[in-house]
Image 1 (cartoon, rainbow, N blue to C red):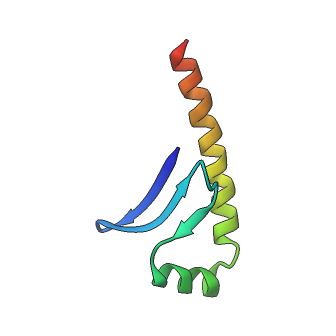
Image 2: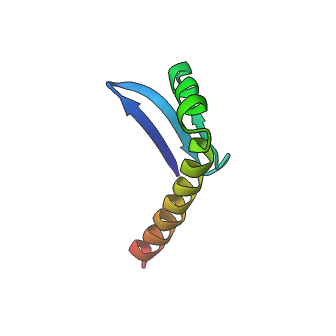
Image 3: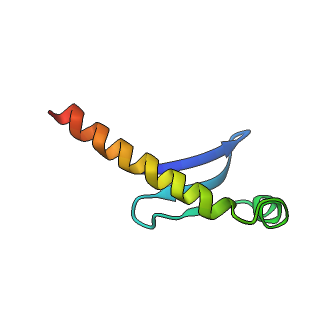
Length: 64
């Protein structure tokens, strides 16, 4: 499972099922989150882990 955040065609973040961590890809995103929302990465990582589990369950349903 992979999730990629894009703004105006530029990748800003990344998540995959192997690392299970959201990783910021732009310096301005890191500066923003540190200043404005220090819990951003932890919160969004949890949300994406939930999406990953939902996606896995949906694929299992479709296989049946």
